[in-house]
Structures are given as structure tokens and as C-alpha cells.
Amino acid sequence: MDGGDDILKIEVEGWEGPLDLLLALARTQKVDLRQISILELVEQYLAYVHAARELRLELAADYLVMAAWLAYLKSALLLPRNPAESPSPEELALRLQLRLERLSAMREAGARLVARDRMGRDVFPRGAPEGLRVQRQAKWEVEIYDLIAAYGRISARTRPVMHVVAHRDVMTLEAALERLSTQLGTRIDWDVIESFLPEGASDLFRRSALASSFVAALELARQGRLEIRQDAPFAPLYLKAIPV
Image (tube, rainbow, N blue to C red; front, top):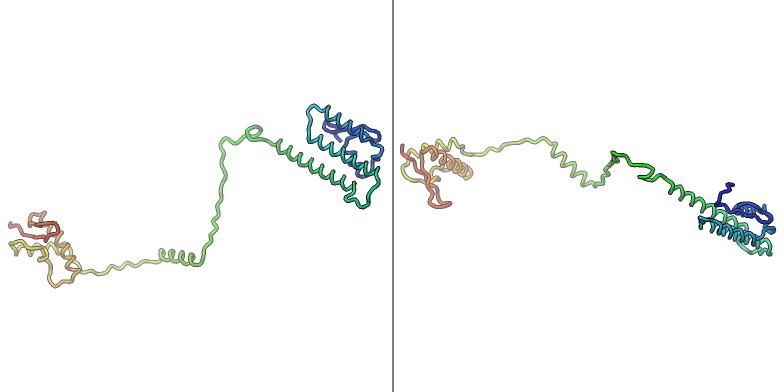
């Protein structure tokens, strides 16, 4: 064993060495505890505590527990043993040793964590970090209605569309100009624009003829061939030819 300053060594009659090794040998009955003075053990323990300049309280507490268990084992050897006593002193000593080993392992793991390299002191981050690449995977959860609706929308977009222009009976602007020019030459007074529309036509055709005749009247007025008069907003529109 390493003879560091943290190890409590005792020198009593019948034993000279570390305290934890004495406890292990006493558990396996390889040391006669009846020859070891508990008083000398306590005195050396107190001297160890007072002589330590930088005392580690947890280590001193461990040695105190070891010494107490040694005293308990010695008392179990000197006093008559009760057969009904459970657990036995040997089993208690084994439990103590396992707990001390577990405590030592935890302390060692804590010391390793504290001694790891620290960011900004032992290791430094990269000057131009690249970042982390995030990979996303979509997880779709749909019902049968959603699938059918999505299929219908895709099918409607990809289905060929046939555009059929319905035939509509309309009067073109050229026809309205020709008709209006012809009828204005035979009239000398103001007439409403509806009087220039063809008679006996359907309602849709008359509406188309009215719109085309209005645009034709504006064009003829721009050319100086007719006058347009309206007495009030939304009042009937009157047309009259201008003599040449």
C-alpha cells in the first residue's frame, strides 16, 4: 500500500500498519484483536487528527468509523456471543468495508469530474464554429379521409381541362358603328339610344347591342358626327346627328 500522508498508520502491540488493512484482516480473523489496545488506537487517532495541518474531515471520519468497528469486533470477541444475534459481527464488518469501498469510488469519480478539462481554461472553442447539422424527418399521421381528399386535389390539378367557349349572340362594335351611322343619316331630331336597337331581339342580344351602341356613339361623337345629351344623372341618353 502507498504510504501517503492521508493514510492513518497505527503502531500498537500486535499490529503496525494502516488502519484499513487492520480492519480487513480482522474481518477474516487473520489478526488477533485481543492483543490490540483500543486505548492506544484512540490516542494515535487523535494525534493523527491534531497533527494534520490541512485536515480532510471526510477521511478522518472514515478512520473514526473503522476504529469504532474494530472496537466493536474486539468487544464481540471478548464478550460471550449471542447465537440469536443477527447480523453477526463479521457480516457487519463486511458491510462496512463494502460501504467504504463504494464511498471511495464515488469520491474518486467526483475528483475525476472536477479534474476534467474546462472550457476557456484548458480547452478553447473553435474560432469559426460550423454549427450542428439538423436532420429532420417528417412523421405523417393521417386518416383515410385526408388521403382521399389529397388524392382528389392532385387528380384535379393533373386532369386535362377542355375549355369550350359557349356561343353567345352579341353585337360587335363594328356592327354597332355601321348600324348607328346608317340610322343617324335618316333622323334629324333627338332620339333616345334605345330607338337605335334592333327590334324583336332577345333580352341578352338587346343588352349587348345597347352596350356596343353606347361605345359606338362615343366614337362618333369624338369624330364630330353626332351629339350626345343627357338631362340628369341616369336619365335617358339622346343622340342627334350633326349636319355635314
